[in-house]
Image (cartoon, rainbow, N blue to C red; front, side, top):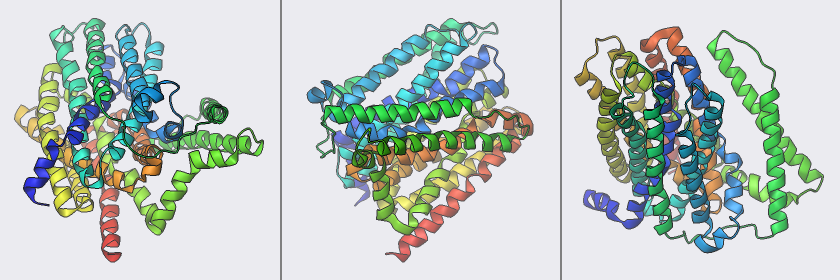
Length: 493
């Protein structure tokens, strides 16, 4: 394909549609992470408590658990009108809007518990939206458009993040939220505006066609109810195990992280055991459970054989450096002495331009030299950009240098994300789109999310300079795995 054709492919309406759906996916995430972090910091919460809120994003890491239900169970009545994918997406987007509106009436100082609950629900519904949009993207166009769809999705996703990041900070600044005395009203108003912006995804969904892909829908109402029953039994087991897991107090941050991993793994294991027990008790037919929850993963391992473990490890490692560093980025800018308006301008406005450029470049490069090589370039750039942050952390605040580093970081992130989304899509079988893609993105996020929950503690222990160096080092395994995958691909022809 020529460079001209690689560029003009972005004008296809199926590609342009993903710009708006990507925006809808990207909007909620910063309202859970960095924007919320600045709000909580303004309210007087300590850094370690603030970064613990990033665990609300663990829903992104475990969405593969309920993704099979989205693949198999239609939304009553609505699916007959709008179609399977569209009906799930409409319901989810409405829920996100309602949660954002509720958050806009809460002051974290007065009701931190209710805010915590709503942020957790926002993480769950936002993860649910990602499941459906990812499936819609893969099902709505042929393979030759998937790289362009991925690039446009990433661009829209980043624009959504910018609106939720820079946009909300501008609103807060204009309404007086940058004053020394804490005022919850500007922050609440910003979240209300975000609910309004979220409606853009809702209207896009209404105007979009349902993908014409054959789906393995479960039509029997009795079987659907039984499937939902065992799912909630498994979910209940997960929650009970997680809440009642023995509490150990560790001073070492690595021990804390290992304990959290064991805690979550135990909860997942409890769910799987309950699934097995329900089939043995014949509450539901074993073939329904197998086809819904296990067949998609069996198909994946059968298809890729011996390289399955390499693919899984690459997916797990690829985004660690970016995600762990990103949780404290706004706190870093704030501690460097920049105000909300400056953070919004430097980090979000120029970051948006760089990300869009990186996304388009990543899409074009992927078409010309292949996704695997583009992935390798992205992995190298991601680790390198974190070293740049380590360098400026030892300097006096300088706006020009900061903008340059932020631009380089977002350019590499846009390029890497486009290639990575296309890579994950290429691994997916359309018979199990939502389930497999949700599994890939879940394992991509679960380890980084666990680690990012302790990012504030790491900064307190080592300082920003050493923290950024650490995040660069943990990006090295992704580079090694990518090189190994390229060698295997060449060997197999």
